[in-house]
Image 1 (cartoon, rainbow, N blue to C red):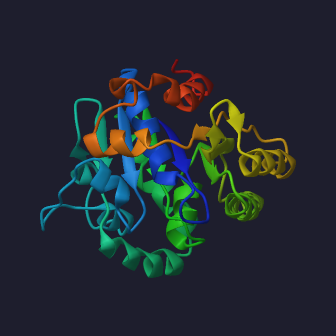
Image 2 (cartoon, helix red, strand yellow):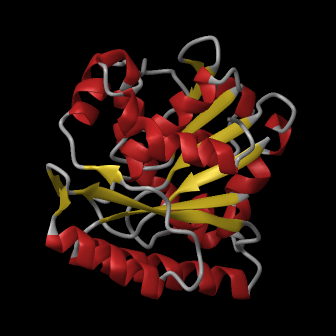
Image 3 (cartoon, rainbow, N blue to C red):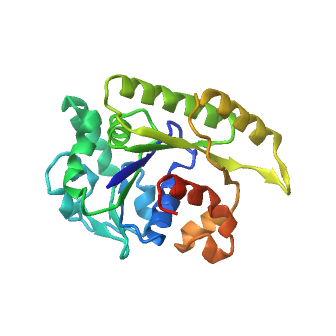
Length: 253
């Protein structure tokens, strides 16, 4: 199982959108995909239509090792499985902080699933927190979504700083898959000046890491999420190009 974590240290960077469409794209290619909602806001769980029953285990119980990780798995469809989250996940912060090895807890908890899935996609929370660090620490490949704006550039800088710090102490042992620009705005065939300037700045600060094709600003992403369908099903297969590129980098296209 190869684990891809989507992480960015600011809200509104397209992190959950990226995780959702990447997971669905992998599943559409016939891959066995595990998705993990590591954000207490639980947007990924909601987008995947997950309605938790009171006794449904979540990532919280997995991290605390209160259950076998297999018992937390929730089937979304034949190829897609979810470890969900809810508001209670925030209480895992203290556990991870006092465990003495918080950054590698999730990596260890996932070991029993290595042969069960082909890919794992983790949606990390948008704060520099214990939950974010354990999500990054679990990654073989790290995908960094960043809005094509000054806020996105700052988020990218902060995320790269965190990765550098974790790499220095070997808490992150994976690779950066790439920076994924989000909400790249075009007016017809002309790229908005703010988007163009932001992408140029991202190239400068990315320290040689790949800048992937942008997720374009489009209402079709929201429609696809709301309807639980692919962009191609809505007639906008061209908007899936960033994810096809990622699949190629992962050897799946």
